[in-house]
Image (cartoon, rainbow, N blue to C red; front, side, top):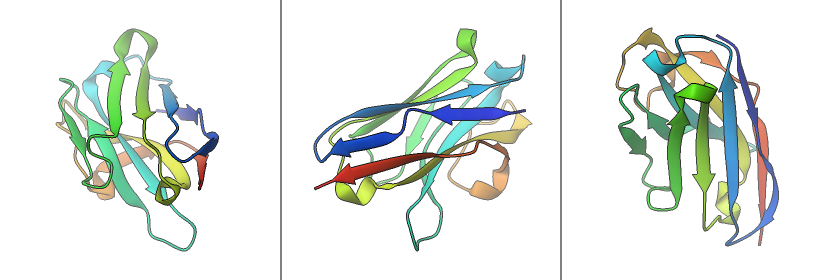
Amino acid sequence: VQLQACGGGLVQAGGSLRLSCAASVRTFSRYAMGWFRQAPGKEREFVAAISWSRDTYYSASVKGRFTCSRDNAKNTVYLQMNSLKPEDTAVYYCAAEGKLWSQGGSRAETYEFWGQGTLVTVSS
């Protein structure tokens, strides 16, 4: 599974961005997908996840502002980010779990495939 994330950029606080992550696998619909981020000098942290059945999970810091969705026909998972804050500045990574038909989760160890990351910078 290869993952290609895009959509990052520079945005002012309060603005919005939509990240996309395209997967090169025909069985995309069977994978739980996740988004993680890593800010400079900080550890990677969980942001959001979506199961194969479209159940979604969010970290407390983004819940209510970010929305994770998927389009199985396009083999793509999205992260819509609204009301962005400077503390959302980070490199965002998409990932696919190694186990099919999984519900997804917040533990990075369960994700086997990772994209290259896309930088989101939120200015104050």
